[in-house]
Every structure is written in C-alpha cells, then in structure tokens.
Length: 167
Image (cartoon, rainbow, N blue to C red; front, side, top):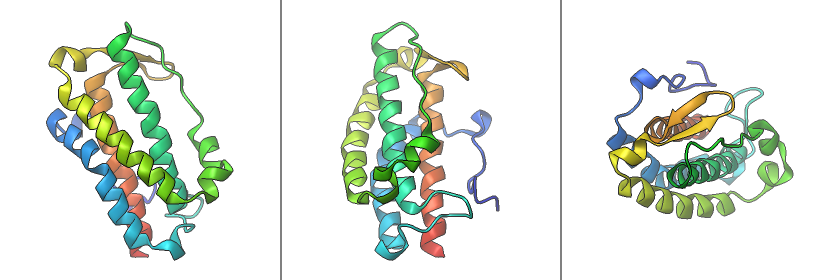
C-alpha cells in the first residue's frame, strides 16, 4: 500500500456519487474524533509515514483545508465563477499551531464547520451544484466535482489517522 494515498489517489471517474459524498462530508467529524481516540495522546506527534505529517498536523490540516473549501462553496453560490485563492497547505502544516497546538481546537472547528457545510450541501439544488469556481491551477471546477473531491479528502486523511492508530 502507498502510505501517501492509502485509499488511492483521487479519481473523478471513481468518486462517490453526490448524495454519498455529502454524507461522507457530514460524517467526517465523528470519524476524525474516533480515529484520534484510537491514535491516543501519546501518538499524536507520530507521522503516518516517513516524512509525512503527524496525526496532529493531519487534524489541523483537515480544519484548514475544509475552511477553505467551505468558503469556496459560498463564493461560488454568490458570485459568478469566482477565482479562488490557493494556499500553501504544506506551509500551513509547518506553522507552530499545526505542529503543536491541541487537536481539540481543530476537532471543535471541524464539528461546527461540517455541521454548517453539510446543511449548505443538503440545501443545494442541481443548478447550485453546477455553479463553478476558477481554480488557478486546475481550471474551472463545478461544486459537484468539489463535493466529490472533498468526500475523498475526508476518507483519505481518516485513513492516515487509522494508519497511526494501528501502528
């Protein structure tokens, strides 16, 4: 198994159907909390692979990444194909709050954020999911594609936590 991609790399052709993707996004907070419990306090600073992020960094990354995703959805729903801002996720993961901050802070953020995000996703129409963002590196992406990508992202990082939990 490639520890960088324990569930495989994202493939739009194999992505979850939209309804399932929405439920996967909604389920993330409970899944991350359960995985963190299995990891335990003593292993929060253990990486899932040599050169990889620690469990602590993965949890903080999920909060950071999904805040950006949620904002992108809201921008796409209120603007005409907005160009979104990218960010240096590796750089963010190396900031001190991500390297040593308490995971409970990001777990609480993920709880609240995913409650809002899931409510938003469940309220969206097919026309809403067809709305687009302009990604500086990936081009135009519609919100259905984004929901499916972030559902994969949820599963991807929970799998990283499970690797540490099982170590």
